[in-house]
Length: 505
Ligand code: BG6
Image 1 (cartoon, rainbow, N blue to C red):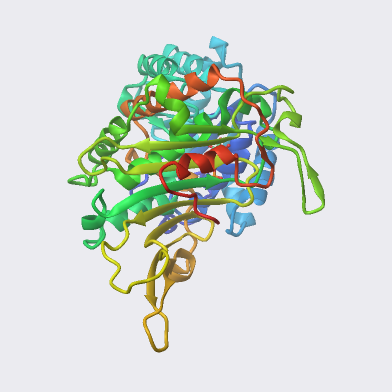
Image 2: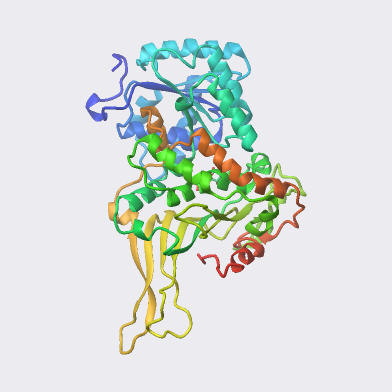
């Protein structure tokens, strides 16, 4: 530990986390304040980082270290979800926080960064290990990698890793091109493409649930599962991100990355070990098995929506087209629903209905697995009994519920639905780390299990690209759902055609 590092007692720290510096490009952005700094502070608070640790924020605007620290303090205090803020720990943490004003397109910035890293490496004893975190505009990812590479910052003593935020490309060709640019300087195994959904405890728990227990996996296939619904509903709008969102849309923003990864986690084959590439190979294989629609098949399998204005709880909610930086005739999807199929032995013919949207009635992300009906109605029930359902709740109220029918007390044989519930909060009674805590720590430790690989990103783009292209050629009659409702009627019709309906939440 550095002699002048005042950071508390070494006994507080878990061993095994390497000394390192984290350099954040795009440090004045929202992500740094809301997610990255709170996560790093929290890891430090819990003693999970090495005390020989430093963070360097890089951004355009001139700012002193102290001014940057106080901005970050304000962000951490504000966004430290369900965790206490400790003044002393912050003060020690902040001593390892630095700032450098730099222009990403200027070579001189990388030379200055090099000197700064050398100096901080000495004073904080970070052992030459550096995690570069790209949180800039996506168009700057490749120039930053080039700048780092040309300044000799991509490979020296110690390890060098590159964490890349989403979006990773805006289609298959641009994703490929970006990988090739990054790999000029950083080998693929040092490129960590972040998908924060994979860092969520409840998404990781899907693997524990499926492969840590012997009882569910035998049922986990087309013989017993009728269909699966994956919902990621948000009650917020675009929150001032209209500029970004106009070129993204719900399909690219949520389905291409987060929800296809969630779907792969639900459907992949068990890996033989929990080694990063063993797990990632299975995910990649699954993503490659998702059916890629022909242009003529898209209309039947995908629905786009955009919210319009509404009055909710006495307040006027603007429509998407009224949001800042949004075109008044925007054709961008704020809602997307797709019926996917996994063309393999296990899942042939099982529909996977995936939907996401902004300004829906509530925030909920869940996976609902609907089992096939009992083959014979031995109780002669009139009408239809509700199906057996397994609900994996990702957020909020993280947990798992199994819904099945049971005998109603009393004479005669009346059946009614009941629920068996596991609730994360009450079962473990402890705070779950945020996705960014998990993922940052993994990257620092060199564990890429929860990061996406080039082949996975490409497979996901291959799946969504026909939909993106088809929609680009359409003129939608937007808005087609009011803010505060569950999306366009066409999404209901898409399921009704197969005799299904979206779960009511
Ligand atoms: C981001 C999207 O990746 O995920 C946002 O860009 C979205 O539009 C967010 O709101 C949702 O993440 P979470 O963790 O709040 O479900």
